Length: 378
Image (cartoon, rainbow, N blue to C red; front, side, top):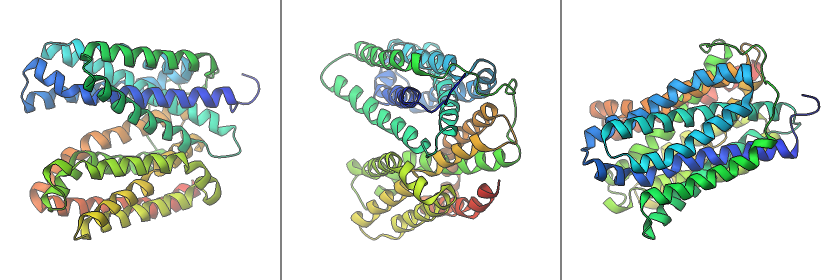
C-alpha cells in the first residue's frame, strides 16, 4: 500500500468495526432470559452453555492473529463481523442445548475474530498518526454496547419476538460493515506474522496488565450488584446502578481519552489511571452510604477507561513480536482475564468474603502504575 494508513476513510472504517463488535456482542445480553426459557434450562446448565461463547472467542483469537499476518485485517474484520451478524438470529432460534452451544461457539468465534482484527487495524492506522487514536476507537466499542443492549431491549419491550428483533439487529450490523468494508486497509500489516505465538518479552507484560484490567471489569460486571446489596447500600432492585455508572464513565473517558493521552502521554495515563482506579475502589469499599459508593464506580470507570487502549498502542509499537501476533496474544490473555476473573473472585470471596475480594482486586490493579515505567522504557 502506498500513502498513509491514517486517512479519514480508514479512521471511519476502524470506528465502524469497533461499533459493530460492541453492538453485536451487547445484543446477546437481553436474549439470555428468552434462551433460558426456550430451553427450560437451569442456572447450572445455562452457565455451562454460556462458557461456549468464551471458548469460541479464545479459540479464534490466536488463529485470527496468524491469518491476519498473512491476509491483512480487512478480510478477518469482515468475516468476523458477518459471522457475528449471522449468529444473532441463530441464538434466537436455538431450541436445544446442542443447538444453542453451536450458535454460541459461532458467536464467540466471530467476536474473537473481529476483536483481534479490528485492534490490529487500529494499531496500523494509529502508527501513521501524529496523535493518539486508540481510546476513541475503543470508545466506539462502548457506544456500540449501549446501542446494542438498549436497542434490543426496546425492540423486545415493544413486543417484537426475539427472532425478528435479531434480524433487525443483524441487518443494521451488515449495513455498517458494508460502509466500512471498502474503506478498510487492504495491505498486510505484518509480513512476518505467519504463525501462532505466545506472548514474550514486553508483550507478556502488556498482556498481563490488560488481563488485570479486564479482570476488574468482569468482577464489576458480575459481582458489583451483590456487593452493593450485601453492604446494604441499595435495595435488591438497584444493584445494577453501580455497573451502569461504571460503564457510562468508561465510555466518556474513552471518547475523550485521545486528548488526554496526547496531553499527558501513555506512561502518565497508565500511572494516573491506575491510581484513580485504586482510589475508586477505596471510595467504594469505605463509603458508609450510597452516593459516595456510587461515586467510587465513577472513579473506577474513569481511571480504567484508557489503560487498555494505551496498552494496545504500546503493543503496536513494540518490536519483540510482529504486531498481528502480539495484538492477538494480548487480546487472548486479556479476554481470559475477563472470563476467568469473575470465577476466581467467587473462590476468593468464599474464603475472605466479597468485601475482602474487592480489596484484593484493588491491590492487583496497583501493579499497573508500578509497571508504567517499564512500559515506557520498552
